[in-house]
Length: 248
Length: 248
DNA sequence: TCCAATAGGGTCACAGTGACCTTATCAGGA
DNA sequence: TCCTGATAAGGTCACTGTGACCCTATTGGA
Image 1 (cartoon, rainbow over the protein chains, first blue to last red):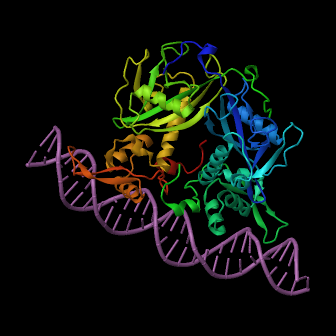
Image 2: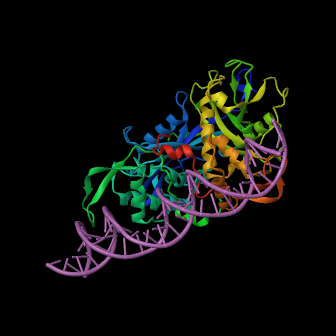
Image 3: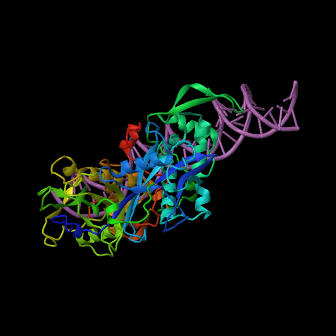
């Protein structure tokens, strides 16, 4: 409560609101995220998630999409899934001042390397495994954020058709299966996977093409269908084994 | 990008960060939320979610918990589930100034009526159905927030054991089933419900008591177990019927 | 005294699933 | 040129979870 009667700047604490974006893609069968190297203190030389201030005329969604476009150079036409993860607000998460960050997760098909020179700092794709294995240092609370984002992505692949967001417009079921293998770190049985995907109406729709140029029979190509949810959901093998609820 | 080199107050837009809390409970077999009547413009006389500023020494979680305690008068010992829903940041959502609100959802057992007089404005429980049916006007974007919160709660009951958060320390399986009926708006088959709940290890644990004073046989009492997730998840009947993914 | 409500036990058929098998096809290396 | 490895595509089988039921016993209140 304590509903304020009017808004005097002295009534509310000084705070900055930013967005950070976990831009995830698949490269060489591994999940990668885009990180930028910090050129200034604090955390100079460490890697951080791309982000920036929410401008007065935009909401956080728009700010996140703007960051996404700026960092990757993709056109607005490219279909990229973007969703809010959660907001991080620990008082000392940025030592300079109070910064509340609304974090987004983006899922994109394989993108080219970031265009160097668009700003002063370096930017590159990092394999998530290499980052979480402590190979590099992440600035601020971005290690926690990345961990939460990866868990969100893993969860999304159970209940939604978002795996197709990692793939180009057309793809084979084998490639779709490879997405699940990369995100969940475990390969699903190919035959059962085919059966389940094709049993979900609107998950994928066949197109009148086949994949050529790779070993093996001509693979039917598909594109993403209109369905957003998978009912009943797929389930991660690792989750089934545990059985006991120890998460969250 | 545009990582700032230093934080001058003129570099970032003036913005206030608040928390709003959707406090949900069960009263008479219906889901209720706590709303406060606004005594000031804008939206004077309309009802709003309880909320307030995030203070300099606390994160949003702490601010939400503080609001929860202030509004309901519950002790800190009362186990109340509190989780972040999402952040709302439309530029004009508050006509006075830029206000970014981090919204939380709390699930509580039946609580007494709010203590009047703790502040100037009125506060009371509203049945969610009555609110969403347009019976009352909600301030700001709180109608959208409430809608998102209800959907979150419905979803949480599928994958987690949080239904027990709506109940007192001990309860019967019939009462647990009534929680699902109230939240999902549809009654589950009692026998199948019993079988599924008891099949989830750690969902509920029997205590050495039975329910007396109500018609029917003595019902075994249970308390919440240690499990947080339901694997495999329960599923809403309404969701099964649809089949097609039309959500989100 | 009867009745409505419901706890608790059970059955049965069916859909979904994991594990597994088989065949055909293609690119690239020996 | 011929293997070989990879894999697309189609299939079987047993088991589990589930929805839809049925039945009986027990209790407080009309």
